Figure 1 (cartoon, rainbow, N blue to C red):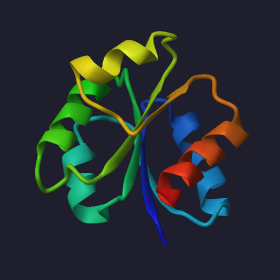
Figure 2 (cartoon, rainbow, N blue to C red; figure 1 turned 180 degrees about the vertical axis):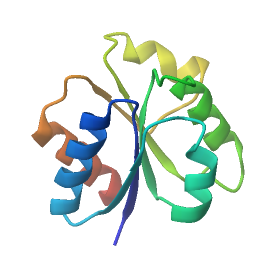
Figure 3 (cartoon, rainbow, N blue to C red; figure 1 turned 180 degrees about the horizontal axis):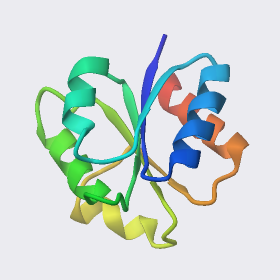
Length: 120
């Protein structure tokens, strides 16, 4: 079963996303801040992370860069999630995510984006 970690400071988004992806057959865990990401990656070992850009305690783009720069985690997929409409400018400056989703997002688009990632 594919593992997905949802990281967002909005508890409702984490809860809803976790329920939706669980119903799709994924093993999903969620956290609400960026500080806990390294420990959660070590313990949960997700194949994909849905990562909010603007977390309360850290910048998701920096977290993405750290994950993609680390040889032990560089294989982990990252889909950035943001309420900003300027998602296209973030990938080259901070990291190269495997996908991007704008908030508010359509549930079907979320499912399709995640399913397409695992079809690669």
